[in-house]
Image (cartoon, rainbow, N blue to C red; front, side, top):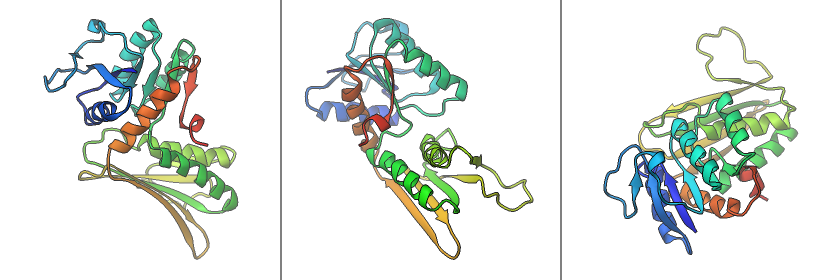
Length: 248
């Protein structure tokens, strides 16, 4: 399988490239990034328009603006793509859905199998503890740009789906002078150090609480998940796929 890595010089792009090299029957044939550091064992293009290699699949760990550039390339050449980039607006998500009419797209804000399994588990808990106050706390390194994390939103959306979409998301109580609403999910972001990613969902009941936490200590987890996603989407029909399609 010939792989193009979009965002190849970023931290995740570098990890993906190394993991692809270790994978069986896969190889990075080229990458694309804003600059070519000269440190990669494969050609790196600084402009999508300059790419002269046609891969079997694209793995994208970049930024939203770059994602749409590589999506246009993927559409033009009918190449399946795995989008692991985060921070998309609602309007940008609608654009991705439109692209999925023309090619197979696998998109997830978190490529960890276990975090997506966690999303399923908390959905079941929410149904059984329907009167709980629910809070989400996410922790990431000090270089992460978007807040809250895409993973926190995955977890919140999973809970909201279980609760008939009656919940609202509360990101900032600083300016509010009122008690907590029963129909809200609090989402809190912590940034510091080199934390790869930690997510906790807490169900507060009367005189007791239940906390479910996933802690990732290596970016290789996400890289391996992206590789599995690439293998999954390679021969799929046009459409938008997610970890829900892989998690049993």
